[in-house]
Length: 579
Image 1 (cartoon, rainbow, N blue to C red):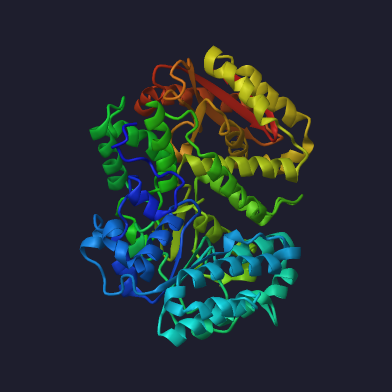
Image 2 (cartoon, rainbow, N blue to C red):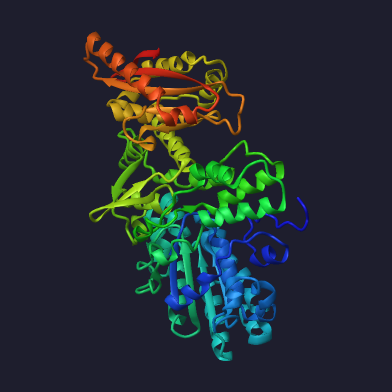
């Protein structure tokens, strides 16, 4: 790429480098004024890899008294540079990211204190010209996070300076310790003389004097009332429509980004075509019921991932999903309790995969110790970005799967559930190999016969897939994890369409030869042969209608469409036929 063309800041969180080293930046600085005028203690939750860290870094630079002489250089060309607030460059900025503290319970206090020591020693050195060298010296004999923070606050107070405290991943301890070690170990650090309780008590004690502003963020709205009475001084604006677009990109911002690169270089696709490619994978997030009529939000990390690879090779990435985001989503697996009775949380995932939506009330907050309870699970899926607000029904929120990226993660969870709750082991790699023959040779029978054989030999799976909807969820989970097709379920294409349409990934694999329309029928275990035959005939009639529909004719592209009937009798697959 030409050196004069702005680079894509994929994975970058250093705002100053993005500006000074000619990276593309979607200007979010206008929100500084809004946050500043809204609350001194601002609390905001968004999913991982949505752009929070970059926003926090930008916020820190804006308020950092040490960056006063570089304000024009950093912010001059941006919205806030043209309309700065009176508080620009007025604070000593202390940023703490608790995800940097390893969650090994045996060494947790030690690593927490070591992290605080490194950060706060650096803070004292950075502001030594204002606080005096004595501020640095006072830290030498201190070793706990609470003592270090207290000393810094006292030094700032003595010199008449105010601190802007940024706490990123504040809920990291609750998420990791509760899940990995349980309530008892969690209480050992948050109650009595627990080190974390002591640290947050210092924050609270100085919040009315030296710590003038706090920006608190994480991925779940756990309360810290059990740590120190009244610590929750921050106002939660996570679901306020005014801040719906503060983190992530809306479609206008994505289009503007693409248009910029099209103006700088020749690209093989139009802006509309690139939007059409990204939208099913990265779009459709809404974080406020009052923003349902506004443009939905794209995951900004995923958009930058796509554009970074697209601009390098001038072609669509072979993998639309960033491997790093898979790692982040894996952190949610531990919240899906898996046991021989399937578990409440696992049943919620099954319902979402089957129907595409669920209803529930999103909890604005819940005690940290209740993070793994079933009644909070839907809220956690929402806060983790696995569900999004799709609509309302009375006091309830309609929550839906936002996009294909998330849908693939949910398919993966379902497969984990089936494998752990039963002894079923269907090798995804083997199925992917069999699907190669489906995609290029039209040879679909081995794939479904393999599934049928495994099911027939595995009685422990039967209670989990009996019933038409559960059967569809089972088939979707396995069909959805492949390299050749996007498994589009009925709920995505409106009622009345085929149960599953395997849409060929022609952008990545333009030579694919076949696509598939699949109708799943279910009969009870005592169904007669005549009933099975009627279901088969009905399915074939429906498939002929579906095959002629406009959306399938469009989405199958250049492939030949094959229509397949699957009829289950209980857990047994008794009919596999092509129309």
